[in-house]
Image (cartoon, rainbow, N blue to C red):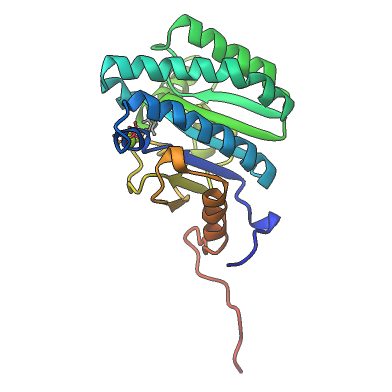
Length: 246
Ligand code: IPE
Ligand code: IPE
Ligand code: MG
């Protein structure tokens, strides 16, 4: 296998952390324990991605559709984000990680909202790695909210309709000026995107490792990076000419 070279490391890696429920189910444990175990993978991968030189790491932690899960599981997942921020914020500050949460904020309770705002403010000037947590996130919802913001800007007379192009529109998304994901990883072997970063992933490369999220480790992350480094991204162009025969 080719070695990992710094230059081949994707600028933005986004992960759909899937398989917590199955991890627990296979052990005869309640699903909530799978989610708790999944937080250990979050810690591992955040540290490791920073060490590998990844600039932006986005983790899909709770989708808009996840509200349809049993009430007890939903409150476990809400509580887990609070506990994660409470227990890990200091380490994230020390690691130079900037924290940002994307997704709808209206449905979140005020305690959680306060913690999110505090975490974002405390880490706003960190620049070693940008950690984006997609929470209460849905790609379509984000696009609709962005469309509303754009319409409001037009209504206020701050934006001419003709001036709204792809770059301007992207600026209204929750991800704002962040670079698009280069690599999207979904664990647990499922091969779907489940409403994740629909706009931003237009040209992402995908990786679908079989490991369930609580089992996902540094070596598996490196394997996805290695695989990514071997991909040829074309963005609609033709491949470069490598040799000229005369
Ligand atoms: C991913 O694991 C975590 C969230 C969606 C919050 P799941 O809970 O979806 O686990 P599976 O897919 O049921 O195994
Ligand atoms: C996607 O996983 C959402 C998160 C990882 C937070 P799901 O497990 O909810 O997705 P589906 O329902 O299998 O598509
Ligand atoms: Mg799942």
